[in-house]
Image (cartoon, rainbow, N blue to C red):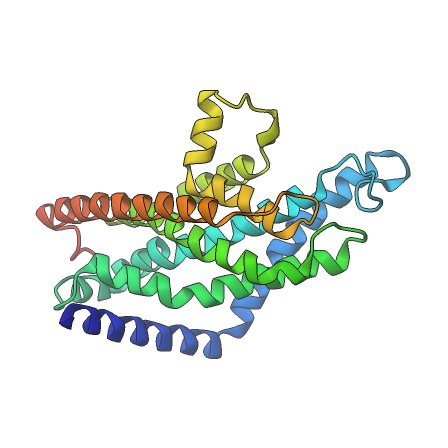
Length: 274
């Protein structure tokens, strides 16, 4: 019980810290979202120019699967922002010297990162819907249903657990290699390719289909499409429960990998370098 109370205090402190960040640097957050918005709009407009009658952006018979592109891109932004809240801040703290103080505090570094992820989750979900809403207003006749947002919030919250597992791995590598920002951006754009992958084109019992369904981020993309697109099948409580177990398993696995990498970094005296 005492451990849970201490963890709740860390979450509260990190949440307050995140609110201060949003209050002091609102332009940083808004400009990031606007930049992300422009990237996909440029892609869609470019594809539209290559097609007859500009069918890339308008019309239900558009040859472009706009909904999958929009949802996958917004989810990639969600993953990128969540992951950078872990490994990105570790890199900054390593350079300023606060990482060493954090690592020798009475709380485990892994626990602090988890509290940081939980405290930032509301902001990341809000950013997801702000970006999704911008595309919904900019692109006519999309089949995305805004009234299904509560179900999408549930799927995103569960997906965040899977993201935490990946973020633990990235954070552990950051402890060892320090400057890894561009490498992780490459990995995040690789996730975008996975999100845009056509799951229906895979053989039901193939290895690729099994891996796609077992990876939290791609499975989350599948459930997110079904949550926000009315033409998709409805979600059952069983599917959501299995998805939660998969994401939880990834978080636990990522936690232990991070602890191993943290121990390795301590043995090599890497936590005090800045």
